[in-house]
Image (cartoon, rainbow, N blue to C red; front, side, top):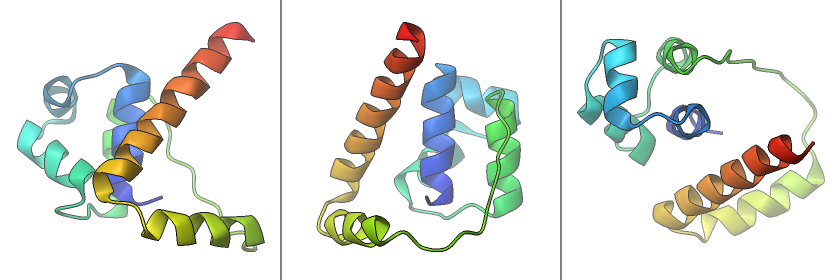
Length: 102
């Protein structure tokens, strides 16, 4: 997952607008938007601090690649950025609903 995607996922999960997150994180709405759209790739420290401003903790791990992931990456490469963002938002919504049910 790229940094901007992690920021967007954390923001949506926290129920924040870009403006509200920017105020919490001490940055601008424009910066949040540029990171989320992939115009600018934020550094790891920036991603961690923005995710923390959403009330979450960023965790990273190094693991062996899963062959299923390679297939997903191949499909994702054929999608537009907007399609990938819409898909991620859909999964975030589904995950949030699943947590409510359980």
